[in-house]
Image (cartoon, rainbow, N blue to C red; front, side):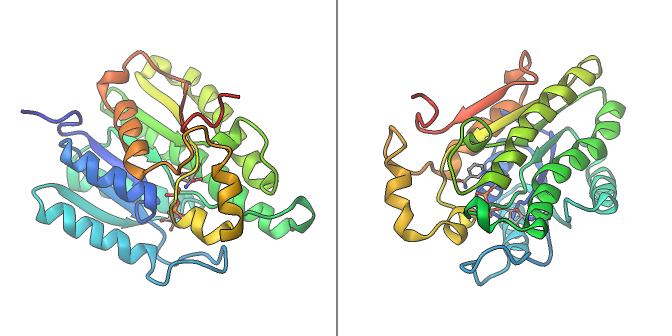
Length: 264
Ligand SMILES: NC(=O)c1ccc[n+]([C@@H]2O[C@H](COP(=O)([O-])OP(=O)(O)OC[C@H]3O[C@@H](n4cnc5c(N)ncnc54)[C@H](O)[C@@H]3O)[C@@H](O)[C@H]2O)c1
């Protein structure tokens, strides 16, 4: 039996994090070759960051995939640095001969009031969540053009769809990602490159745990009709769908996976 992503080469940014890790594991099971990219130094974002580094988690992830019959490599990548993207794409092509899919997944979140925002924090989140997504698309598209097509999945959010409070800067980046996706999708449709956005609801990963105070969790979950956090595999299967040829008639779209959060 062949997998849903047989022989596709997939670069995942932020692969050491909660959603990136699960995508890599499930995509490898579907036959993909994985380029797991992450920062080597964790940025200081929030007081409750995990003690083991997300780069270390990326290396463990790659070992696990390779020991379980899959193929994966780890590459250092700061998504705000164009030169890092250029070497990540070159490493993908050197190791696997091509690049078919980018999961533009790396991102950070701040749960702070508007009056607490600083110019420095605003630039940091825009650089990672928005410029990082643009540089990712810019860097992989020539490689995809060389092999006759590809699929890019940009990470937006339900916070790019409706307002939530305490996340103005984050919301500005995720709203921007949705429109950048539509613009790029139109530009490269003739190259057979499909570009879609995924909009996760609330998922209990490092990003959420390190930024949102525990006392706020219940009130946030009460806004989800399904009354629970999503599980990382529930995003990973959405990304697999967008990465695979099953979604061949989709481009410029938002795939919302949120337990009903955006229904009301
Ligand atoms: N968890 C949620 O509730 C949720 C909701 C909506 C959207 N999202 C989006 O999903 C994506 C993945 O988030 P997650 O929940 O897995 O978070 P996470 O914190 O577990 O993982 C994020 C990863 O991005 C990496 N990263 C941060 N800055 C980077 C940089 N400059 N260069 C390269 N890598 C960098 C981190 O090291 C980490 O491995 C993000 O774009 C996030 O905004 C998450």
